Image (tube, rainbow, N blue to C red):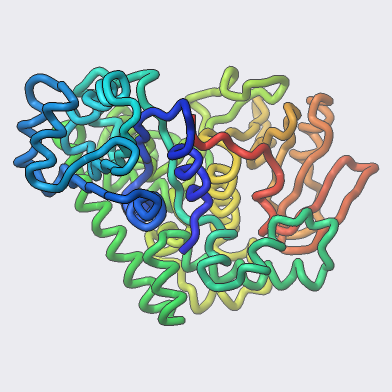
Length: 437
């Protein structure tokens, strides 16, 4: 496996302004793998402390958070920890919130020591402590993108070519990418699922792994007690998955609980990065989040493979569809675009919905490139009226032109200010992210 984040962790290691690094992301997206298989290999010594398994070590973070005293205790059960030569890794750090607080003192008193931590559900741990603002760095890890999937499948030339602007790629090659994307729609980007598909070539085995991951997520829901009823979390998660691409109402996400309870459940899933809230906004200027309407929103799931498994999409039937955007009524395509935009471009997503009474005009997503806002539509073909897209371009002249992602090849309609792009090319339509902040 090769991950885009590899360059970021190596850059962190070599930075003169390095601070302790916290790798964030949902469970099983590859946080621990990234540290053990990429970063650790660049050090003489590697010390891993799993704070979920080794709860007996929490006592060393209970009192004085003097880093040298903590290191003395850790060395007794591991090995010598030497600045510049040892990578100290706190895995599952959310299990010991005081260890997160301790990171600030490692930065202040032993800045030359390389310290990295990883965890999920970190926001819940943050509720219990004073977050060391300005004393740590964060790296957000997502499921594997389509580009990373191609690399994992041993198709490196194809992966590199997938990042070439489509207007410079022959239509026949664009169609090859779209054909490969069909498999990704069902395999998804969870590393274990990609590995299973690569090694076995069996969708059935891959689906089994997806089911196991989903079970582990739903088992995690019990850890949300007493914040929320796990049954409410489960229902909101399932109904959010079934409603990808649709405007949501908290009251409709789960009939068994109140809208207020459903909202709390949705917010917790969003914090855990299992679902992503996509708010509507006014695209008249930047930043987009300044005009976000928190009451008018859609959502995506963290991974397209987990989405189709959650919704029990009949793969044997959907793979026979001539057009990928017809698969599961277009929801898989909208999910794909959302998670690619999140992985490549921004930690937040927005869309446009007309505020006029009785109007249902809506554009799926908004992308930012070189300080310009571009409306993004996910459509089944180059035909159709694209009424909402034309309406938005007319209403907001600050938007240079619209982008339509579809199951076809590159086309530019200059007179309409619309560019048609093959669905696989999402990675190239927005700004590259600064993933370590």
